[in-house]
Image (cartoon, rainbow, N blue to C red; front, side):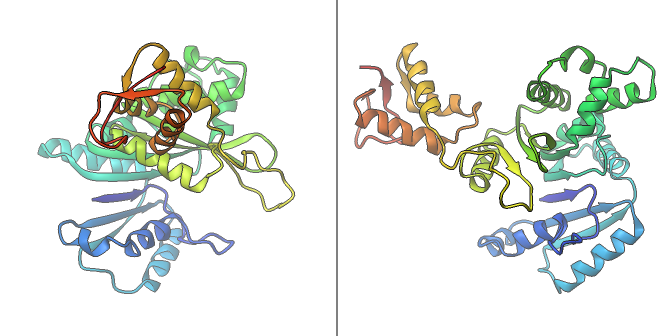
Amino acid sequence: MLYVDTHAGRGRHVTGEPGSPLVALKTFLDHSYRDELLKTSEFHFHFIERDVDNLSALNAELEVLGALPSRVLVHHQQGDAFRWLSEAVEGLRKSGRNIAPAFVFVDPYDFKVPAQVLADLMGAGRVELFINVIWRELDMAVQHRPEPGEGMARTLDTIFGGEEWRTEITAPEVNERMSQAVRLLARKVGAKWWTYVRMVTGGQATRYILLHLTNHDKGRDLIKDCIWSIIPEGGFEVLKSEDPRQPMLIEREPDFAPLRAWVIDKLQAGAQRWSALEEGVRSTHWRTTHLNDVVRTLRREEAIVADDFVGRFSKTADPRLRLP
């Protein structure tokens, strides 16, 4: 399995917190299933960094970790990450092989991330992309509406894999433009599912978007679990501020009323199996555990009826659910 960090940096922030390479590596080294996983798999960590001094500092941080297990291999590449990834994918294509299962963290220094490179990665095998989209600058460039052929217009064509951004990212409201941009990126990259978190660095304006792209249903489910675990109040927004007086952007408790309404609406169209509702909720931001809690509550309140199942009322029994 592969973990790729496209802009690995120095390994530690100026504030002292570990950078993404150390976070990723230590997360695996401290994982409770590490030894079991290493019995059958190798784990390769590829850290790519264009700045020589940054890469040297990263290596020094990695050396502090000491000797790694024999099936944990760390690779350093100095240079342009997108060129390196393109060459790696092209090498796989020529050899007729797919990439090993990979999680690729794209954390660029600016917003110029080429859609074609990401599309080639997604098409090379079982790949999950996690992209830090520098949204504010990207949105400003799109809003500027540069003329075809201008330098910024060519840059936007590269980012979105064509000129469709001109006709598909047009909403007057910023959050809707954000949604339009994400949908266009996901389509161009060839991802079935897209999930994103807004990052705010003071005030209310979105500074970054953390965007996850995957073609696997379980990848979509897992990223939602991850997001809910770090944002348990239920809003897919993160506030980055050192001022404790700054108000939270998210509710303290998730409001399940919209999910209850979603279930009722689905059942108004006709009875459905519990498993069918689970498939449907994947396209929303709710977790399957939220759905399961709501279904149990609705039945307990006699707002829905369950039949055509054997044994205890449970998701495993997959009862047919309907309105009374």
